[in-house]
Image (cartoon, rainbow, N blue to C red; front, side, top):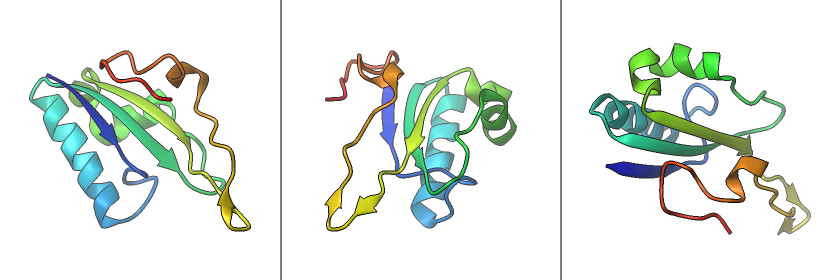
Length: 102
């Protein structure tokens, strides 16, 4: 099954209960053989993760089934959100699913 997981972050990049849940859900579904497209954010000046980082966290077996798309969390300016610029590889859609990002 192809599954898209949208999260405001994953452990260890962003610390919190939902981030830990998103990480564990993606990992366990990937280990069961599901194709996971994980769209997640990093905050502040944290670096975007490299593939080697993801393999270290998820493990090589899970990463065989995970496509990770990471972007910086939008910052607030005044009372409105800055224009959201998706990474170039997202503009045409996630390759592991049928959904499109607008």
